[in-house]
Length: 441
Ligand code: ASP
Image 1: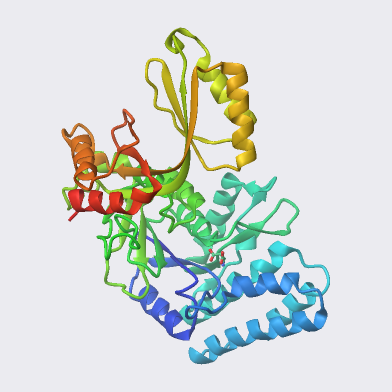
Image 2: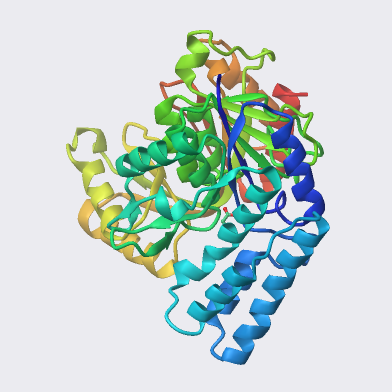
C-alpha cells in the first residue's frame, strides 16, 4: 500500500483544538503513516510561538527568568494535553530541558525542543511510534548529510511502520543537536517523505495552497492547483514563500509531489507541486488550461545603464563588469544588452557598495555613459503554458500599456517559462493587478 508523509506546521499544532483537527486528518487517511510536526505556533495574532519562547529561554541570563519562561512553555503544553484529554506527563522532559538550559545547553538544542515535545504529544494522541529526529537526521560540516540521513531514516522508519517525527533538527557528526534554519520542519518533512518512498508529501499549513499572486494586491486571487518545481522556484525567488526553500530538494530528486494543504479547510485540494517531466509525460495533467501559473515580483532593484562605443567588439567587456559585481558581493538579477549598451539589474545594496561599484566600472571599463536608476520593480509572469504559445509577451505588454504603465525592461529566457518585466516601484501593484486581470480573471 502506498504511504504518505504529512507535515503539520505551527498553526496546526498551536492548541488542543487544532491538534484534534490534525488527528482527524491523519486517522481519516489509511496511507497517512508518517507525520512530521512543528512546535506549537501562534494561537491568535499577537501570540508567541513556542520556538520564540525557547529562543527567549536561551537568551535570558538569569536562572529565575529562565524558570519563568520555562513555566510558560510548560503551561502551553499542559493546556494542550488537558484539552485533548491525554494521559501524558511531560514533566520529566520539561525538567531535563530546564536543567540543560541553566547549565550546558546549546542554542540549537533549546530551540528545537518545541518540536520534540509537540511530536511526543501527537504520537501519544495517534498511538504512533515517536521517532526522535536526532536518530535519523544527520548533519556533517554544518550541512545536511543527505545520503546518511536517507539510510538512517529509511532503516528506522521502515521498522516503526507508523511514526511521528519532530521537525526542525537532527544531530551533527559528534551527536550534538543541530537545528535547521527557521521554518526547517518543512525540510524534515521532505526528508522523511523521501526516506519512506512516500507517494506524496502533504504539507499541512493554514492556507489552501499558493495563490496565483499576492493577496495583498489582488483580493482573493485564485489558488494554483498545480505548479512544477521549476515554476515554483521562479515564483519563490520573487518572494512567494510558503515553503522553506530547502524543502523542495529531497522530494524533487525522488520525484515525490508535494501537496500544500490547509488544516482548517481539509476538503480544499490545495496546491500540488510536481516535476515538469511528470507533466510532460502525462502523469499529471492540469485541469485549468492556463497560459500562466503565477505572477510574483519584488520592488527595489537597481539598474545600472552603460553605453560604450563599439562595446560589441570588445571581447571581455561583460566579464569585467561581472568581475566587479563579484568583487563587491553584488548579486546580478538580469543583464539585457543592446549592441553598444548593457543594463545591469541588481539586488538592492547599500549606497557605499553601489558607489564603489560604479567607481570601479568607470575606472576599469571606461563607459561613455553610466547612469543609475533606483526603485525598479521586477515582475515575473511564470508558466510552462506559454511555451510555444504565441502572443504571451504581446498580452503582457498590452495589459501593462492599457493600465498606463511604462515597461522599463523586458526579458524572456529561451526556456519560455517566464517573462520578466521591470516597472517603476510606484507602478508595481497596478502592474500585478493588470496582469492578473489579463491572464487569470
Ligand atoms: N518551529 C520552527 C520555527 O518556528 C521550525 C518550523 O516550524 O518549521 O521556525
